[in-house]
Image 1 (spheres, helix red, strand yellow):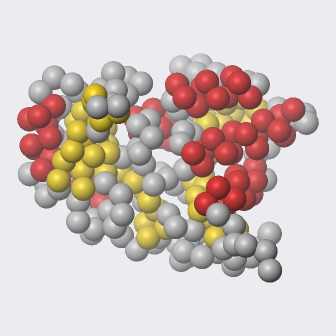
Image 2 (cartoon, one colour):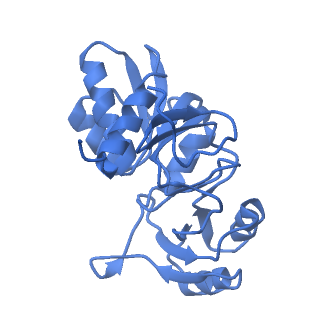
Length: 241
């Protein structure tokens, strides 16, 4: 009996399945993070075989990877409307498709590209869909550097534990020159309301709650990979491919 697929195998399986929806000549947003990077690698193989696409990257890291892979690139300024974006997620609320994103630090650009896209397709392994957001991951909040302590205190007033993200002992700096405060909330019963409350805090640039943006999930589980477009349970996908 072969061993069950590990997380990397599942990410690759989801990436291959998502590739099936990419049409020749597509203009698409290219997500950030480990799962999106697997997709970029798979996409590059198809591009070398003749598929024509133009990609708008959602971070400097994804841009560098795309250049290394030979993917054609454009900017959001050149293409304010995209056909679709393919990205990963840190957590997925099963019934609503609401998301937590931003563990990789690119949440602002990811959201800008997502709202510019007609469809946001999320690829993930079977551990990401949950009943309620916040069960495992904090909500990343991008904040201006000036007065970040006050902003963090205001975030804690919403009921979380706010921690400045560090990298090698120093504050993590986003592509836009901001800090990230990771907010550990109890399981989030009303994510849309929380999203509004976070945005009202002075000093907040953007947050990692993606509400009502995802339209399709591609979930790879131990029993196979499934494309979900409704609000069905996405925990373990029965084999459909």
